[in-house]
Amino acid sequence: MAASVAGPEIERLIQLLARLPGLGPRSARRAALHLIKKREALMTPLAGALQVAIDRIQVCKTCGNIDTQNPCTVCTDPRRDPSTIVVVADVADLWALERANATNGRYHVLGATLSPLDGVGPQDLTIDALVARAHESQVGEIVLALNATVDGQTTAHYITDLLQDANVKVTRLAHGVPVGGELDYLDEGTLSAAMRQRTLF
Image (tube, rainbow, N blue to C red; front, side, top):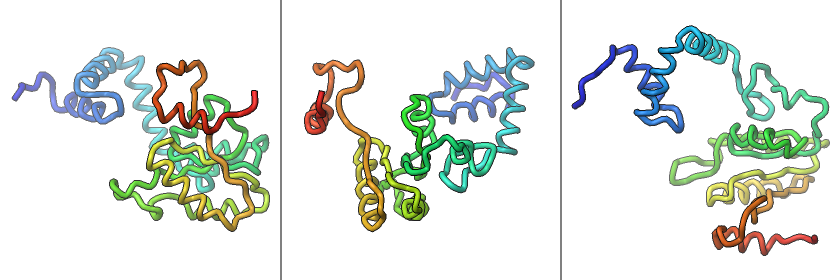
């Protein structure tokens, strides 16, 4: 067993940083060392920002986004199209769509996708709230922006079945050739999906 080279406080900082996605033990040590070296310029402001996040960030009661206000900025934006609800599994997916400026609709965050192997069932997601929103008079389309995985597609089919009696159009994201993609480098599943969903040029 390797001997500890720092006090318990520093070791705790390293262990906590190592829990972050993309940071292993070695990366966490480098990050901790960088924070310690830049204590005034980086660590103190970061600690303050983390405390503000703990105190002020909350989950939007309407869509499930995270923000410092409730309902969130997206839900209260009058420029958003209330007739379209884009369903995503996680807040990270919402942020990705916003970075791409891909939609002007509103969102609904499920919190995960159905995954029997991981013990995630319909009761663990915000599906009931989505169905209730789909029955609101101004909603005309539900866009299922879920991952093209088995769990994502299972969730999409489950939601589609629940929305049978809602007066909404249910759509999903297109699957196929990515922008800038070369056919020779794509997997067979992506190519066959692209061929099935071909459009007029």
